Image (cartoon, rainbow, N blue to C red; front, side, top):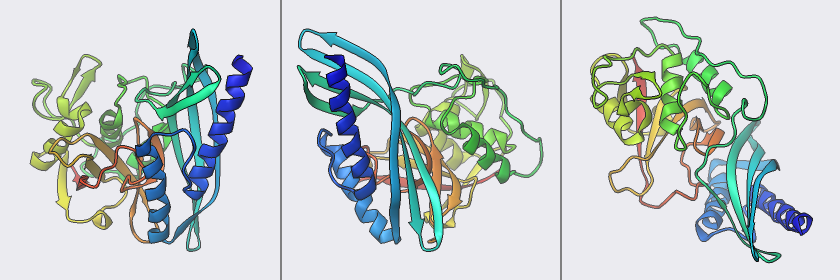
Length: 296
C-alpha cells in the first residue's frame, strides 16, 4: 500500500513541477497555491523572463496512517533556471509539504510552516559561527555571502524558529558588520545573546520593521519609495494582508536585468526569489511593502 501511495504522490509532484515550469495548475493544490502559479506565470511575462527548466527533488520525512487516512510529510526542493535577456540565473526554494490520502486517493497536498531539516539533522557537517568584521562601514559583500551560505540551512550558533525569516535577516545584517544595541530590554534595540535572550526586533518581523523605521544609531534603515532603489544588502518587509501587521522580511542579494531586487529568505527557504512574492500562497492584492536601505 505504501508503495502505491508513494507512486501517486510522485505523479502529483511531477505535475507540481510542470506548474513551476509552465504556470499550469497542478492537480491537488489549494486555491491559493493554484492562484500563485498563475500570478507567477503572468509576472514572468511582465519581467520579460522565462523558465528554461524546472526540477523538483526531495525526500519523504514521515508517514502516519489511521484506518483509511494517511498523512505523508515530505520535503520538496525546487530549482528553476530562469532566462531574462542574455542573463541566466537559478531560483531555488525548499518547502516542507503535507499530502493527505483517503484510501489510495490523494485529496490534498499543501505547504506547511515547519522548517526543513538542517544539515546537522541530515547527518552532514555544519560549522556554527559568523565571520564578521567590526567596521564603521557596512560590508554588503559579507551580507550577501552569509545569505548565500545559509539560505537553505540554519546556523547552529543561533536559535531556530519555525517562522525564521527575521532571525535569518538579522544574522545577515550582523555578518555585514551591523552593531548590536544595549541588551538591557527585549522591547528595545536590536540584539541577540542566546536562544532565551534577544530583542523582539531580532526575530519578529513586525518589531523589526518598526525598529528599522525608528533607529537613529547602530543599525538603521532609510525608507525608499521603490524596490529599484535598493541594492544588495538592503531589506524588504512585507505585510501580506495589508492590515498593519508586518509578517515577513527578506534580504536583497542581487538585481535582475530590469534593476529589480532578487531576495534570499527563510521560512519557505528561497534563493534569488523575485521580490514581489506574487508566487507565494500568502500573497494578497492588499499586500504592503517597506523598502529599507541599510546603514550602520
